[in-house]
Length: 192
Image 1 (cartoon, one colour):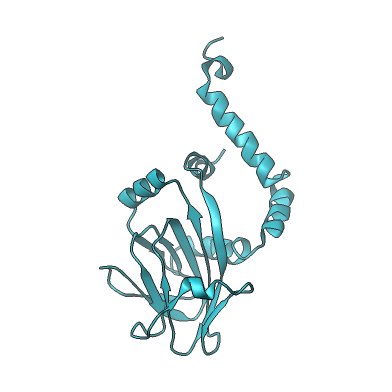
Image 2 (cartoon, rainbow, N blue to C red):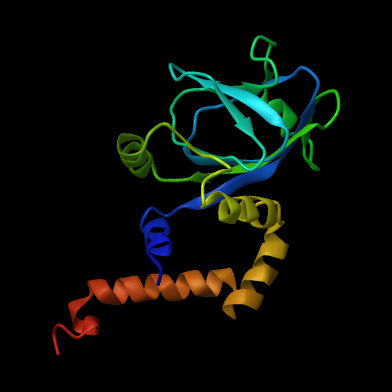
């Protein structure tokens, strides 16, 4: 199995929220602290983002952001605007919208982790990682954000089965059984 699947299995990662944010005109949104790893992909437009003591940064189409920060982040066209709480925007089912128009679009979500794993990630990673659209890895991440994160659970399960030949739950169960076998000497060949 690949190393990423191994890490995600060990930390019992689970995706909780994924969605789309559309914005235009003058706007700002307050994002709560990460309870795991937040990920955002800017699909079109530009925005400024400020979190805690970090300097404000400009994000543009193709940029991908990973956050493990324990601080609130504000993103918008104008950071002096009074921010709208993300929770209020997420009550809409077809994508959140703030401001006038849709010149800005992003997809994003959060992967929840156990509390001790969150602490480990926060101690290991910078609070905010930005992968610029000029990075060689940005094209792959942008595809992932726009194609996979915007899928419904049913669409993802169907796509996963077409690609992997099994359902996500069956794949995960088999993977966990393999990990358990490695940990048991009588099944791993060590005691034979």
